[in-house]
Every structure is written in C-alpha cells, then in structure tokens.
Length: 357
Image (cartoon, rainbow, N blue to C red; front, side, top):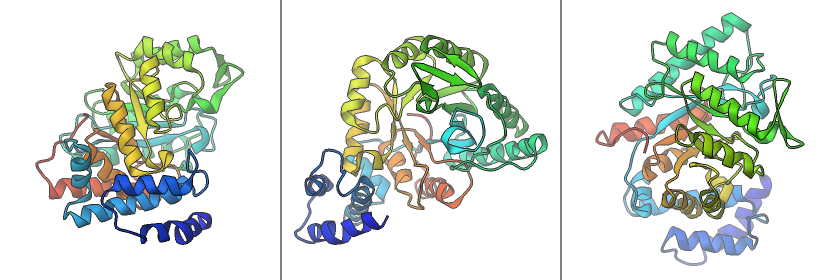
C-alpha cells in the first residue's frame, strides 16, 4: 500500500495537476504512458485504478450526473440493476477446510427488484448459518464472508445450499434462487489432472462431473471450471454445457479485452468476469465489457478478496447494465456496502429495471 501511495504522490499527482483533462480516456492513456510497462508493473494496477476511479467520479460530478448514469452515457449502455451473486460457502484459497472449490453462491434471479434480491440473499444466508451451526457447530468464515464448514466434496456444499434456500422459504431453481459456483480450478490442477476430494479427474472426467452437477442441482453459472492454461478443458466444457449454463472466465481472461476476444474466437466460454484492478484503468474495464458484448458474451462485475469500502463496482454494474455482480456474502462492511449502494441507486431511480442482461 505504501508503495502505491508513494507512486501516486510523487509521480501521478504531478501528472494530474500538470494540465486540464477533457476525458477519462485521455487521462487513463496518460497514466499508462507514465507507467511505461505493458501491465502497469512499475506503478502498480492498484495505484492506477484508484486514480482512474477517482477521476471517473470527478468527471461525473463535473457533468452533474450520478456515477452510474455517467458510466451509462460514457459507454452507451442501458442501465440495469444487477442480480447479486452472494458467496455464502467458501473453500479453496478462501477458507481453511478441505473443500477445493472456492466459492458457492446463491443468485436471486426470480426477485422483482434489487431490494427484494438483497433481502432474499440475507434470508438464505441466515438460514444457512443456522443449518451449518446445527450440523457442524461453530465454523469460521472465508475471506469473503461465506461459511467454511468442514466439508470436502462439492455436492456437500450444494446440498447445504439447496436446503438453506428451501428453509428460507424460496424455491431452488434457475428461475427463482439459483446456485453459482467458482471452482477456481487453478487451485486443484496439477500434472494435467484435477484432484477433488481425493479423486483424480482428467479434463474429460471433470467435464462429465460438471454436467452431472447441472443435472442434479439448479446451477446457472460456473466460473473458472478449468485451469487458465487448460484450453482444451475449457473447449470441452463449452461444447458440453454452454447451451445450458453460463461459463465464466476469470483467471482465463483477467479482464483483458484481447484475451476475451481470444476466448470468444476459440470457444472457451460464454461469459467474462470483470475486475477493474486486473486491467488497471476504468476505460480499459469498459473496453473489456465491450469486447465481451461484441462476441455475445455475458459479463459479471466482481469485487476482490482484499476489498475496501469503495462502491465503484456497484455503479459500474448498474451503469453498464451487465445484469450480474458478485461482492461476497451479505456480511462484513466492505461487502455489504456494495449491496447498500445498489439499493440506494434503486431507491433514487425506481424506474430502473432489475435482472439478468
């Protein structure tokens, strides 16, 4: 953090105050030129994205627009309040249990507005808390606020979610309260195989495993189902399941427009995860969303594991109208603040629609 702040104070601030800026694109280009590396390795993406976000807010204020509306006008998007994907069960790198799949989320796709979607997420989260507590006793939380019970197989997590959704009074289903997964397969891929709960899977085996889960559970989205370099695995799953489920690339694309285009050209996925600090500037984030849309791919706006209380991604999701956001469980201030911002946008703009794009 101190390195990022030093770079902002000693190099970026003098640039910002050196002349007028007429667009965010102009400013972001200058930031990349100042850094001088292809991937912002010198100043750091976290330093540059913080300044780019601050500048976006300043341009919105200068035009007298709420940030989400400025984003919509800048990108030519139709605003839409997104379906939140709440990360309520954690494993992998996010938790200290034996579950290798990293995230299990619930998505209130059947809600009629953002406020009721958030209420649904909170209700299921609390039902899950009671269920986990009664079955496993006190358990810790993962990095993003989801529970981390001592389970090891993905079906154990999925069974817990189905029961919690039902207990909370909702219907587990892709048209009501759906399930989304982020296996984050980089974490259990080694020697051209995938290790899940003590069993080794080839890419063909893993594809069949995912299809079996789709047959048994109301899953609407699978993120990083294969390792980022296992392109053959991505293609297998795309061929087997893209007509049934959203397949999201995160590690595969790292919010890079060129990599998203490559994924579209080669049939890797039908959706991309969008994290602004992966690419480093707000305008490049817009470019990544545009690349996905040109190729008929969906987008999901995402937080990071190490989060702050900044709410930019909520405005980004609403302003670009991508229809999906994930920001962790409905717990912890740095996660909840994003959902609160979405509710605030809706309260001030009741005519805005809600749902998947």
